[in-house]
Amino acid sequence: MSFCNKVVLITGAGSGIGAATAIAFSKQSAKLSLVDINEKDLNKTAEICKTNEVLKVVADLARDEDIKRIFDETIAKYGKLDILVNCAGTYMPSNIESENLMKIYDRIQAVNLRSIVALTNCAVNAIIEAKGSVISICSVSAKLTTKYNIPYSVSKAGLLHFTKCAAIELADKGVRVNCISPGVVKTNIFQSSGLNEKEISMCLDTCVDSTPLGSMIQPEEIADMVLYLSSDKARNITGTDYVVDGGMLLNGLIVLR
Image 1 (cartoon, rainbow, N blue to C red):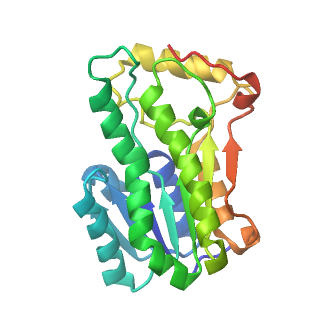
Image 2 (image 1 turned 135 degrees about the horizontal axis):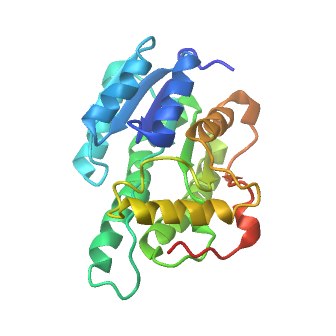
C-alpha cells in the first residue's frame, strides 16, 4: 500500500491516534500536513516523519480563522489535498447537573464536531478535485450510554451522523467519507481532561475490564484502519463506521465513574 504523491492532512497529529496515523502515512510515502494545538508534540511527530515532505501547522480547531489557515497553508505548500483525517479531539467529564456543563459542552462540540464540519467544508472542493476521502475518528461513545459523559458522547454521535450525511452528498462526486469508532485506546486524552491519575486509571481499568477481548487498543491499530479506508482497497466503502473496540459494544452500558 503506497500513498506516493498523495497529500494527507491530519489533525491532532501531535499525539495518540493522530501521531500514529501521521507516522503510518509517512512510511507509505505520503506528503503530510500535520496539525496540532501543542507545538512541542507536533514537532516530535514531524521529526519522526521527516523523511517525507511535512508541513506543520499549530492551530486551535475551535477557532474558525485557524481552520481556514490550516487549509490555506496546506494548499499553498502542496497545491492539492487528497485525504483529510480528523483525529483531533478533547474530553472533559461532566453531567446534566454540572454548573459548568454548557462551557464544557461548547468547547467539546467546537473541537470534536464543529471543527470537523468546518474543515471538511473548507477542503471539500479540493478533495472533490482529487476524488479523495475524508476519515474521522469517532468513538464507541457515540453508541453507548455512559455516566458523566454527555458533552463527549453527544459530539461523537453528531460526528457519526455527519459522516453519513456527507457520504451521501459526496458519493456521486467520487469522494468517500467514513469514520472509525475506537474503544479504549492508550492516548493522553484523559491527561488533559482534568481527571487525576487515580481517576484516569479507574476509568481505563473499568473500560478494559468491560471489553470481551480484555485488552487496550493501541493507536497504531487505528492508524492501520485509517490507511486501509484511505486506500484503493476500500474504493467501494463510504458512509461506514468501522468499530475497533475489542468487543466493547457487545456489553452495552458502561459506567465510567
